[in-house]
Amino acid sequence: LAYTIMSMFHPKERVLEAKEWFERTYSKREFPEDAPLVKLSLKEVKAMDLLVGVGAVSSKKEAKRVIEGGGLRVNSQKITDPFQILSLEEEIRVQVGKRRFYRVKGS
Image 1 (cartoon, rainbow, N blue to C red):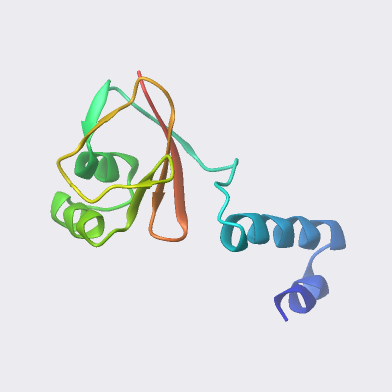
Image 2 (image 1 turned 90 degrees about the horizontal axis):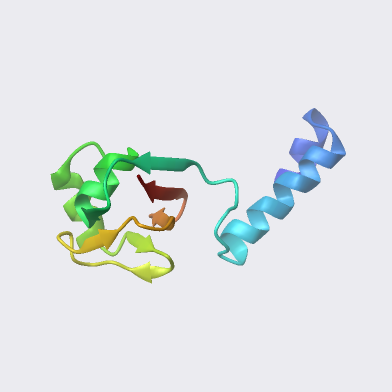
């Protein structure tokens, strides 16, 4: 249905690209390569501070709820401790919930 509706308003190539992106990201659960890159001026960070730093949540309290509810994955690993220290020496892939993705690098 979405394919049909989008075909009415967009060129076929763009519709096919969007369909493939959706299938890779949500059906096959692959990390999207076009996820935004966020640079933080830290070498390591607490999990809850990471969520605030990338702009995924607006407060540490909200970050703690998201993490304790199982809504944070870093490099495909579920993080459940809001105080866990994460290294930013190398780029990490962060997924918040089902639909928000970030690539994060420390400096």
